[in-house]
Length: 317
Image (cartoon, rainbow, N blue to C red; front, side, top):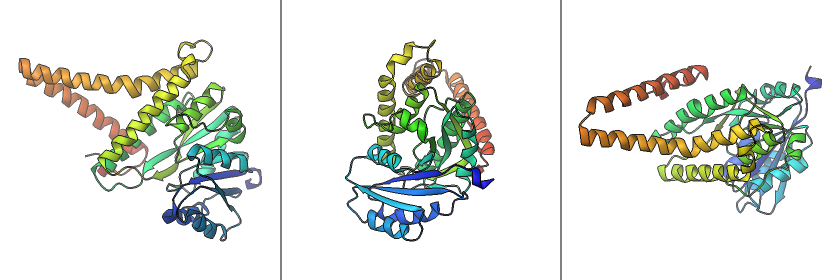
């Protein structure tokens, strides 16, 4: 059976990842899959990333290290695509870890020739303080649940950077990664949807990634995410009014725009409205009941998602 499994190229872009790159590559050599290669793309690092990666390459013939002038993550991923020997390409972060079963879990999706990409289940690895634990819940409740829902109609709107498996043919048809947005992974996924490829999600293929542990870093990350989303929507804006011809892309764009821009504004408006009602009319009971209802709903959804992903219940409080 293993003889019929497709070759997979794991592309690992790395910029100044000297402290972690050797360990990361070693962890990839423990994956439960018979035919794959690891391509480390050193994107002009100024530290010892290239030397450390070469040390890992000497330990296995699966590993190749390619050095290029610094050009950003999109550029590094495109170099990896050009050098990949596999019919499937897995793109990931240098500082993330993926589960040993990830490749075997994602490959069956590609039995359907219309599937162009499969996203993995991204989890927060460094659950060390309130900021990172809140993000751990957000990834489990928000991102994973959203992708499960979108996958039911084979229209996942973003393949997260820490773990995404792509059909090489689909990547080439989409033109690879562009560098004109702050969200190259979302941009690429939208280009694949625009080209008619189905994009799905595999919850059992997991990746653990480092998340911002300081509040200021978290704000900066979310600014980049939101700005990148706006750039992606504007880039595909012609499809916003093309529901008949491109329904999947059109609805995906509207969902992204509403989720990233309108929902946060409405949330702030509602908070301001009820605070105003409390101060002016003294309607404390109504405000409290509104808050309690929202809190209980959020707790119920979070508990469901924790159980669904078999996650640590201590995150719930």
